[in-house]
Length: 216
Image (cartoon, rainbow, N blue to C red):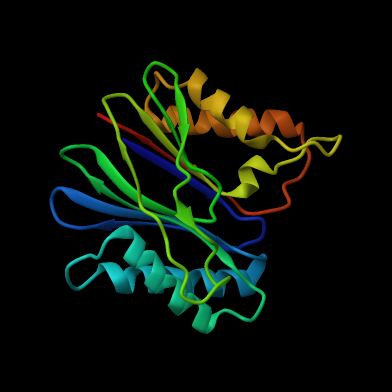
């Protein structure tokens, strides 16, 4: 059960996410955030999407750490000096609900267990484009029925209120915990509503992406 929303700061932006089927029982998922806003960031996000897809389509898929290492090299070749991107790449086994992933500098996705326990998905390595030849570490998590998996970009957690205070990841996790019994679409809009309520009308200053998976 999946729900997602992308809210660009301008008409287009530097956030990116993608679902990539790997046969009947497996799926890859990627979410990333390129530095900057507007057209320049959107072009680099398109390059990032193409780099990820090039590693996934047309043959056997390498391990998540190998995919991200290759994407890092490709991204470093096209990104202007001093511009970086974060990327979280995962492969889902839809039969066992096992998830293998690499977090390359992205805001920590998190699992909300059916009982309410929250766990961050941290394993990985550096931002894309930061270091040539970076090595990445694979993480693993197993989902169970009614567990949530939440992905987001920093445009969600950095949303400010009238005092300039950021919404933050702790509030996002609590919003997910409160609505974890609902369907993914309701959970997503409950979380976005909580962010909007926190901002109290203060305008957003960055692209915002939120994706919610609920295990069935």
